[in-house]
Image (cartoon, rainbow, N blue to C red):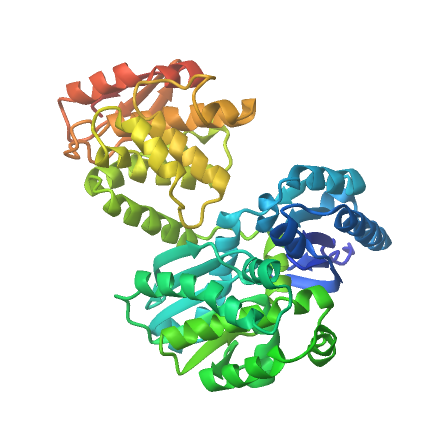
Length: 514
């Protein structure tokens, strides 16, 4: 009996509205999870210039974006690609435009696609993944103390790896286009604009240098679209990166800083809006290299934006190693607020077990497991302010604290779970909870119900209950506690705070011996 040959994987596409261009990649995901690109399109679009100069996306830019998108959709039709195979993402700086919702709606009307806004947490994760891939290619960088900087359109990110493990992270409100337009708004294109640009850069460089003053640097990796585009002109890539000396970067920056915009476009083969950011990007990276005394910086090989888009195409699955980096970052926040680490870890382990073994009840996507674990680690940060109503203090602290690897929406879930880990139930008029839609409110209810049980199982903060066995039977969830005969304290805690578990899942919770 003959069998038909295996069909090649169907193409899918991601469209990305970036800071200076609107791009699309088309390709397919291989069996190994890598992306095989078949087409890449890129057209200039001055999103960052509009936002940092005027505070809005201008009407002409909206019309330009709509025209480009219509052309891109025609290309996807030539591949017989349904809309379900196309994703539309937007740069995180778009949120700073006062009319960003109008712009997103225009994109959706033009394409029929849901226009998703990448936030700071998403961008951090994508930068981390680029850094992680470079460390895997270059053992020298992985084995040492490696500082990673990313100068983006609106923000600067820093990550610090010690022997391949992320141990510090920070985010600063200064980027290539933000700095450039701040200067342009004051000086236009005056001869002194580079001096003012350096003043804009110096503030974040000083702040960053202070934050990392106690860290040893063996290597400095600099990530960014502009720097990665010129690095091969200065040094041939080896093991996934170009090693660019500070002197080479200084000479090249001085040379192109004197070029007119038209000369810059011809010299570097970039479109005009992309070229606007090259000098500020090089100036910022050079200032960082000088401040840290770097003889050279390592610049990853490849096209930053195209790599970012390919990560979006394959949905960037959260690996176990990445989740552990997120958990470690959460633990560092817990240390900052002097939480009970043993209790937090114990609650997180119970919460994870409850999530996994009760999946048929809650029906939530696996990504919420990480949200629940982080919330368990940080549910008592408000004790740093006061034990009285510490759940409310936890909400405030976590809403104001960036958590590495989590999106803004995920961080809000974490904050709300910390708010509701005690017996006080969510109400429609509560701050932040009232902003959620029905589906999002149900996610909070489901996760808070699990967190409350996990927390109650260590009510004494003494880790008396070492392990649990779950037995759902009829309308009762029996939790067996091997080795602990008297669970009166834990049962009282469960009875007092687990009413929403009973309401959401329809189970009473009873502790018992095996």
